Image 1 (cartoon, rainbow, N blue to C red):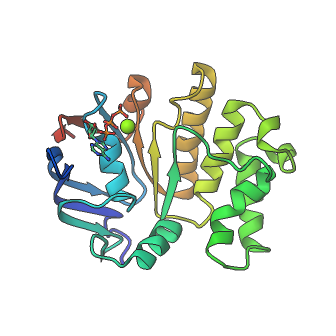
Image 2: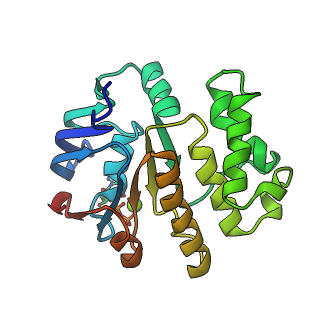
Length: 228
Ligand SMILES: Nc1ncnc2c1ncn2[C@@H]1O[C@H](COP(=O)(O)OP(=O)(O)OP(=O)(O)O)[C@@H](O)[C@H]1O
Ligand SMILES: [Mg+2]
């Protein structure tokens, strides 16, 4: 994979839900995500943003069309290969942080590494500690999620998304559950991590001011890319 291979490429992606009454949710989506870019996806509720992100994230399958991740045809992978791709090539940030309450901050951040059955001591752990310090949680490594604010919890989730050094981070309304001050802090951190780590970010947001600060804004209207 060369340096300018797109991190994700979609060609003619369609998604139809339902067997009884089929509903088409995505129509003929073509999209190219380049290495290192920070792209925002905006659109009305129900327009298909989460569906699109879930297809790129291999959490859902397209009805038709091609999905190429890091130069590999990802639409037709076996389930265990899909899982490997999700773990090693992609990072996920959701509206809710899904931290495990009985694990510490550092342990939560290390979970994707643990799941990939690598030895996570040494370099991977040092990198996670470094990132947690970078997001201002260096003195909270042994705290439990319940001992953190909402914004701090989401910062742990952002660091966790980077655990396996992914090429593409997918974020579905990562600030949707936060007050405006924490939202700004979380957004600024994602932007900073995008610059310092060079990972591409694809972020669904309802916030105009965040979208304006992205390299690129993808507008979805009724399951179609209307403007990009
Ligand atoms: N599993 C499913 N089965 C049937 N229809 C679904 C399913 N998931 C989503 N849909 C439909 O697909 C459409 C798009 O949903 P999606 O969640 O992608 O919207 P969204 O743009 O993310 O909206 P929001 O901004 O509210 O999160 C909706 O009309 C929804 O009802
Ligand atoms: Mg959604």
